[in-house]
Structures are given as C-alpha cells and as structure tokens.
Amino acid sequence: MSGSNHNEKESVSNWREGIYTNFENEMSYGDYLQLDRILSSQKRLSDHHDEMLFIIIHQTSELWMKLILHEIDAARRSILQNELEPAFKMLSRVARIQEQLIQSWDVLSTLTPSEYMEFRHKLGRSSGFQSYQNRLIEFAFGHKKASVLSVYQHQPELYQQLQEALHAPSIYDASIMALAMRGLPVDPACLTRDWSQDYRPHKSVEEAWLAVYRNVNQYWDLYELAEKLVDIENRHQQWRYNHMMTVERIIGHKQGTGGSSGVKYLKQVLDHRFFPELWSLRTQL
Image 1 (spheres, one colour):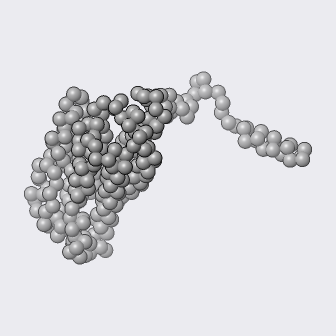
Image 2 (cartoon, one colour; image 1 turned 90 degrees about the vertical axis):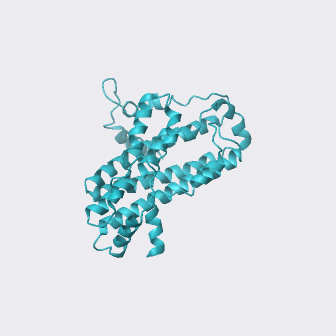
C-alpha cells in the first residue's frame, strides 16, 4: 500500500513539473479568451433560476453565428477569386457549427411554459427576431429583405453594416458567377442583378447546375461546391424547424416579445429556399 502511495505522489510530482504558474507578467488562458468579460455578461433581470439558461443559450448562439459569418465571408471571397477548394473547408465548418445551433434548441426546450412566464415580462420588446447576425447570415445566403432594416435604425453603424450586406452578392451569387467563369451558359442578367433583391430561381441557372450534375467528372469542384451549399441549407432548415417547435412548446401561439406573430412567422419561413435550383434539379435529373 505504501509503495502505491509513493508511486501516486511521484506521478503527481512529474505531472506538475514544467507547468507554468506565475502569470504576473504573462498572458493566461483566461486573459487570452477575456473570460472575465464573457463570464460576467450573464446578467439576469429576474430572480428566476432558469433565466440563466435562456441568456446563455442565446449568447452562445450569437457566438456561433459570428463564426458562421467569419467562415461564409471568407468562402464567398474565395469563390469570387475562382479558388473553390479553400471554400470547401470553410463551408464544411459552417455545417458543423450549424449542428451546434440545432442541438441548442434541445437544451432550451427543457424550459417549461410555467418557468418561462416567470421572467418573460422582463424581456420587454427584445426578441431573437432582432438578431442582426441572423439577418447577416440570411443576407449572406441570398435571402434579402430591405424592410427588416428598420429595426436597426437606432444603431447607425450597425444599420450601415446591414445596408452594405444587403447590397453585396451572396455566396450563392458568387457560386453562380463560378458557373459562368467555367463557361456554363448562365444568363448575364443573373450576373448583374440588383443584389439587394431576394434571389429568384432562373432557368439558365438550373440548366447550368444540371450540366454540372450530369458531368460530375468534368465539373467535380462545382459539384462539390453545390453539395456543400445543400448541406448548409439542409441544416439551416433543421435549425428553423427546431426553433419553431421549441417556441411552440414554450409559448404556444402567443405573439413574440418583439411583436412578431411567433410560431406563425416561423412556420412561414420554413418554405423559403436559399439555393432553389440546387433542389429543383433533383427532380430533373
């Protein structure tokens, strides 16, 4: 027994050897991640236990959204430069991030209607509907609505950022340009359209993608790009559906705190497609 204790102590001593412990003049893990700022940002407005869950779910979702925007923006630049392969890694990462967002609704769904009603009134008019990063993601995917910008007029810098995103080509627009750069017959009107308008399906784009899917060996990189985009849209739809079901589970068909119709609105957006031709071509093949 004494020999065993000696070995355990020696093992602990060896483990500690070389571990840096003096951080008076060095950057620590907490310093690098600014954990003092992050972990002090969960400020409940009520005394209810479950408000902490509500805050953390939404804060972590916004962090994941920030990373999605970081990756999507880089992928779009890569595609516009006709460098598709680097974009594949970024888009794969987006799909993995989306899995985290999808599963977050499972955690929030542990909040019961009775529990939520204990602090819902403290939210005032704040609502997830106002998430500007969610709007930026939708814009980056090609779903444009100028009318939603009115929510952000009280924040001039943010309003300007959203305006710029509204008028910029989406990742799908960039992908359509990639089709044209490879000599596929895309109508020029699709390449010079008003980027601030919601994308509408076009026959020439569907024909171009059909050519890619019918000649996979010739257009392998474009084929891979298309499937990455389908992965992203598929997961975004799962996220939307889980969002809708979680809201219905917790508040039923009540109006949202920000004035939206709640579940009714969330059900409507489930019918929207970001990359319509990548879905319609499956019927044509």
